[in-house]
Image (cartoon, rainbow, N blue to C red):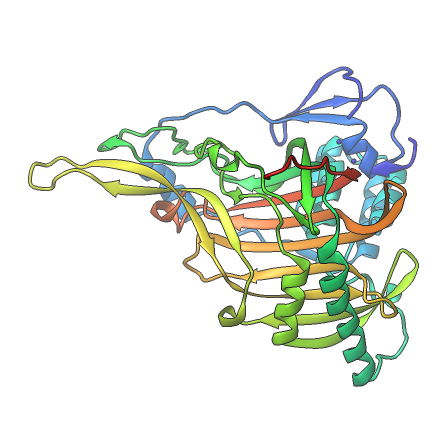
Length: 431
């Protein structure tokens, strides 16, 4: 084996992964890290959609009694030891992956440590689950041994660092030129795959998956998508045709795309909310100041916009025993309270990382949106700029709307990277 854990290569012999019903195509050469083994060495394909028309009541009854998944909590060191033991025992890829699915990290699994697991020769299913663990841990602090022991700065120094960060966001980041970039998204998902809708009369189901097959509680790799994006003033612009997507496709119930959390907006909200010192942390060898913050809903400017959720309306008449229904698709929009962390260069105020975690109501169709954005100094057209290079987004939605709120939820992980930044073409006059 060579050294890295990521998704592609030339197609080799295809083998079916029976465990999670996805297709694995190995590359022709050995990979050298978890990253390249997924994105550079293996190609995955999701199974084709299948529509099953079965008894609705029985399906709902199963979902109502399905167990709630709870993982065994484990540290990064314990994960390393677990992988080493299973490798020594000669456990199969399926057995290792099954074990990993029942684990939950209590601290961040950094890319460098994750990629070191290549020495245990993980199979394709295990690679996916190792990456899932890493993504799920992206919002967590690193292992205690990796946190600098330097004392916290005094309150005046803390205030000065925050002031530099606010000034940086207002005078530098928000004045970035327009850029294009290649945005690559890896998607992992569990639970419900398709939208349930009630169309027509009685039990006639349109585009339905109401069978007895229980939703998979474990995250699996769905695929990779790349697109060219444009950013302006440090904000990613939403694609013009985002509203035209098929609302009943499995790509529904995701953010409308575009900017995500806006650095300057979040910093200003945090400055007006509760902001406090958290710890020091090392990022790319430099000691970075980490602050936690929280913003109440009443003071929030955090925008959430998801498409599209089914809403069933009764269009029949009880008097005529006509129980016809119609399904519409609606967006979910809200401005929630939220909390998170800023990672700030104490000398320059440059923000190296931002974490936001939205706070939703129990009745909301979106139940989780956790985001981590990493900003990196990048050479663009001969000049250095600090731009987003990676985003990790964790979401939980109720994919089938209000009708099946008690019975379905879906978690999705997006691992997004930005590369090949370049100046955006000049817009014609009048644009």
